[in-house]
Image 1 (tube, rainbow over the protein chains, first blue to last red):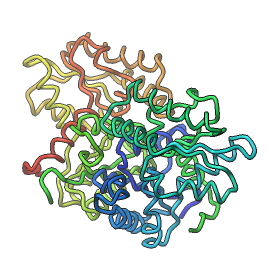
Image 2 (cartoon, helix red, strand yellow):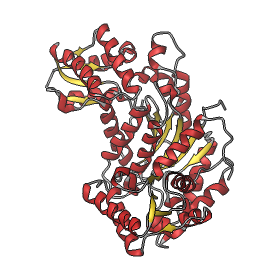
Image 3 (spheres, chains in turn cyan, brown):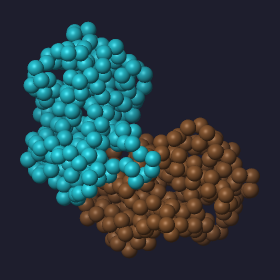
Image 4 (cartoon, chains in turn blue, orange):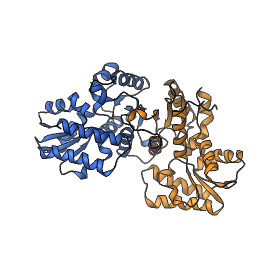
Length: 240
Length: 240
C-alpha cells in the first residue's frame, strides 16, 4: 500500500441519500486540483439492508449478517479500512468487526470525540437520533466513557424524530421537516445541552450548524473528515 | 436474481463529483418511499485512473487496463451489468467489454438515442465534449450510424472546453465557468445544432436545460435513467 493511497471500504445505502452526502463531504474535504488527487473508495451501496428501526423493535430481520457480509466483501476487494455512514447500524458493529481483519472506523466515537473538541469544557452533549440508535445505547456509552453528561430525547421526541427522518428518506427535505427537527434539537438545548450531535446521517441533509446557537456536530461530516485523514496519511490505522 | 433487484456495477471516479452526481440522479429517478425501494449499486470510485485526456494525446498511460480490471472486479462481486459515468473513458470500452461476460451499457448510445427522441426530426445534433472524447470519434460514429448530422467543436473550442472542465474538476462550479461552457454550446447552435448533448459528465454539474433554447441532453442523467430502468426491470439486458 502506498502512503496516502488507502482504499476506503464504505458500507453504504443507509439511506442512499446519506451515503451520497457522505461521499460529497469526503470530496469537499480532500485537497485536490484534479481527479487523481482524490481518494479511492469502494462503495457497496445497498439500500436493501433490513431496516435498523424494525430490527431494533424486534419486528424485522437483523441487518447484522448482511452488514458483516458486505464488510467481508469490501475487505476481500482490497479495502484498507471500513466506514459506515449510518449511526443506527453501528448497533451491529460487533458483527462487522468479528467478520473482518481490517479496522472499522466508528462514526459514534468520531462524533463524540469531535463534540468534546468543539463544545465547552465539561458541557453536556445533546444527542439527536433515531429510536434504534437510542435503544442501542451507543452514544450514551461513548459519552459516559468520556465522563460527560448526555442530554437525550424522550420517547415522544424519538417518535417525532423518526417520523420526520422517514419523510427525508422518502425525499422530503422541505422547510417544515427541517423546522420540526430543529425544534427537537432545541428541546435538548433547553434541557442543558451545550453541544449537539446529529446522530443520524439523514439529519445533516436538512440541518445546518447556522441553525443552532450551540456547536452542531454532523456525524456524516465528522466521519468524512476522519476518512480523508486516514486515507491520505501513512499513520497506523486504529485497531478495534 | 430477483426481478427488479439487479446489482449495478459502476466504474466511477472520473471525475469524483460526476460519479456522485450520477448516483444522485439514479436516486432521483427511482420511485421510492423508503431505503429498501432503492436499487443496489457497487461503485468502484477510483479517481486515480490515468487521465483520459493525457492518454488520448499520447502523453500518458492508457486507462484501458485499469478500467478492464475494475469491470472484472465488479463482475466478480456480482454486478449484473456495468455503467461508467464518463464519456471520454468510453474510448476504452472495447478493453472493458473484452474482459467481462456481463453487459456494458454505453453512455454514448444512450445519449444519442435520447437526443434523437427529444430533438426535432432529422435535426443536427450538437456535441459539447472534451478533446479526448472528440478524438475517439464515439459520438461522431453513433450519430452517423443514426443517419444524422453531427455539429462538432473546432479545435479552439475543444481547448476552451477542456480548460473550463478542468476548473470544474478543481472544484470551481462558478457562474463564469458555466457561462463559458454555455457560450461554447451556443456556437454549436449557431452552426445548426437543434439538440445539444452534454457529452462529458462534468458539464451537467454547471449546465442546466433551462439555459438553452434547444433540447439539452445530460449524458449523466440519461445514463442514470437507463440504469434505473434496467436495474428495476426483468427485461433481458442488452448484449454487447
